[in-house]
Length: 333
Ligand SMILES: Nc1ncnc2c1ncn2[C@@H]1O[C@H](COP(=O)(O)OP(=O)(O)OP(=O)(O)O)[C@@H](O)[C@H]1O
Ligand SMILES: [Mg+2]
Image (cartoon, rainbow, N blue to C red; front, side, top):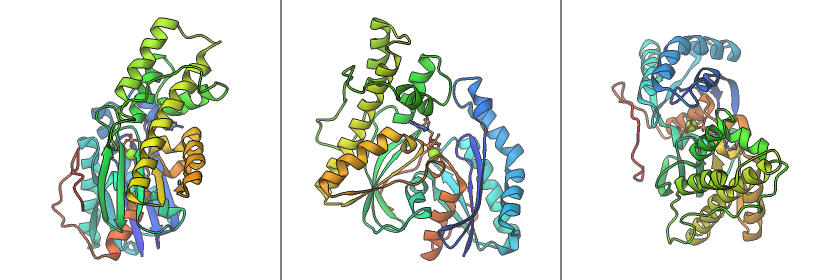
């Protein structure tokens, strides 16, 4: 089965061609980061206009790299939400056009489910599993019981963890996006030098809160200052607190629910320290941790294509009049 996957949910225009779940024939990502960097974050209006300019170019590039034409595609899968609505609609309209022109079925995909299923592009794992999706807009724990069936069991009450990385980097004038810059800045630092709070860690639920951690960081810097001599220690301590909270809550959920597999996904899952903390702690609990390569953690069309593949295998196609959504409900699918 050949699936074309389209993602324009935020600031990356990405189209991929996938053959039979694991064979990525192309996965073209056109990033708008340099454009949004000028503003210290994604500007929705600029993002959607840029998608309009790029979507056709990226589609042609993806088809050319795959060595295929539209008539070879069996299914068109596209992000339906959640995301910036103007951005989502560009990909969705483009996908509907391709579907109608080629008479190939359409599948509307949940972008966060796609982040979770991106692991299948790299390795086969058994259901059930927990997926921790940590990105610029989400910090959520999903329980997948079988293909195309999941429920949300924990989420952030305020900022997403990627957002906290981005806001802290912006505050320090380190640029956008902040995750990688902070990880690099923290490399030579000690994660136990500043004791930042771990909000909600003792609460009897699987929810997160990262806005308090961000504020504690900013207050600490205001009070104590930040310079070349303490920068790496402060950044490492922030990163350690974020990783500690994510690992503690996800492992608690896995133990409570008797789940033996954890998948990490979303842009923050490319953080090396987060991976290390999960691997170390999960091993002692006899739980396996599965993380896709970094380029499949951030937004890409291949993760949408693999999700489309699962739904197509279950004959779950979408009508041509599906809508785009900025938010999507987490009720069990
Ligand atoms: N090495 C890293 N360490 C920590 N965070 C990182 C790292 N690399 C990227 N990130 C963060 O990942 C986020 C981008 O991830 P992604 O592309 O999945 O998010 P998004 O698509 O904008 O949001 P969503 O998927 O919720 O719609 C940014 O917040 C960025 O700072
Ligand atoms: Mg994303």
